[in-house]
Image (cartoon, rainbow, N blue to C red; front, side):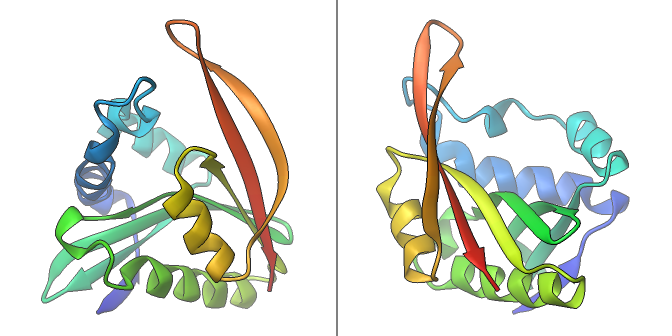
Length: 155
């Protein structure tokens, strides 16, 4: 597996991998907002400082993670692994690479937000040393409420 830093020419790849990964949530009461993101929205995010990593296997993109650096904190989101590669350690490998990337850029803490109902994601991050430090309720369309936990790890 090769991990590369993404740039503007990779927007379509980022979008495609993300949509594949998040499609499992399309029938939820409150589907992930990732499924509504467009190429333009990702481009705009890149223009405002977002970055991404892409994992390739045999020249095929299999995972992405998007993130922002803010002084000593790296905030990541949309960790996405294509369905046929899920459960094979790809997400952990991406996170380990992201931690190394963060350290090289002066980061000492990594944070993310996770849906409280998606226990497999919380368990993944906990197994890698992340701790829950906050819990909030957000309002979604159609009067839906979504419980979100914030997690962090010091590196």
